[in-house]
Amino acid sequence: MSSSAQAAEKIIGYQRVDRGIDSARAKPFVKWAGGKRQLLPELLSRIPTSFNRFFEPMIGGGALFFELTPSYAMIADVSEELVNAYVMIKENVEELIDHLGRHEHSEEYFYRIRNVDRSESYRRWSNIERASRLLYLNKTCYNGLYRENSKGEFNTPFGNYKNPKILNADNLRACSRVLQTTAICYGSFENILLDAIEGDFVYFDPPYVPLSTSSSFTAYTKSGFNEAVQLELAEVCRGLDEKGVRFMLSNSYTPFVLETYKDFFMEEVQAQRAINSKGEKRGKISEVIVRNYK
Ligand SMILES: C[S@@+](CC[C@H](N)C(=O)[O-])C[C@H]1O[C@@H](n2cnc3c(N)ncnc32)[C@H](O)[C@@H]1O
Image 1: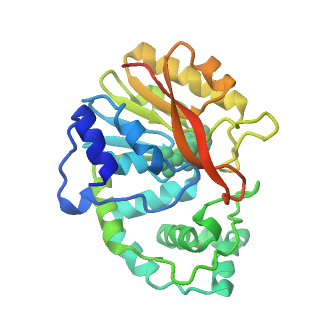
Image 2: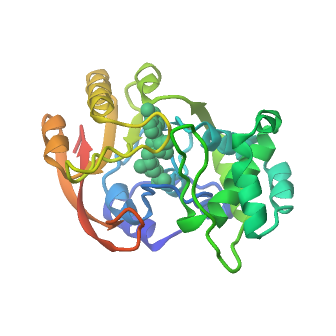
């Protein structure tokens, strides 16, 4: 267990589900924009001490999900490629491991694999091939960040790493074990309102509201996540609150977020973040954790 998880256990004494040594080691299998690894202690110290099912409808790399290894969970995302990778890791991890072992590491090969989503033949790729491509690109592209252009094509350049760890079979198997009792869905967060019931716990980690009004709202996928969608998300939170479902949400510390969630319990926390678009400059910025429980 990581030191952050141990610290959080000490603070609130939540019960970690024991799934055996391997799955306790499961870590996110992709690096994802907005990944929550370094905010984990703040998040872990605020989760309810007990709940029935865990929902994370914007799973991304799933930092909190893998740290919690909940007994019963539902995870979702609008990134079709990402959701396919989760499903393949859950259902067919050995075939995926075998396929991942076959990739080469060269710039020429990288661009051939990256650009295949611009061609008709990509439609005929199997789900395993697509999952393998996503994991390969994530480990070898610049800054390890998945990014799509407006046509939904992967467009991060080559990373030029000396010896990237394209295959981590132990971790994929550990992730697969954690996913066995997890429902994995492709779709938008609104569906959560129908599924979650009293006693369940939902964590939302949306694409953040930009800090300055000059930067546009972040687009993680071709769908984008603009102001109207942020307001829709707040409506979903209100709906969950009315149903007696506990939720926690993280977002940037901005006047827009503070106003939008003013009816709930909000706390400012400090997070280490890339503060320019290339991720070269890092610094502490304020984020907010919203909850409908204390
Ligand atoms: C900040 S990231 C989540 C990072 C994640 N917590 C982690 O630890 O890696 C936001 C995620 O929301 C997803 N997303 C964007 N719009 C969505 C929507 N309408 N419904 C569900 N997920 C969405 C993105 O694809 C992205 O994976």
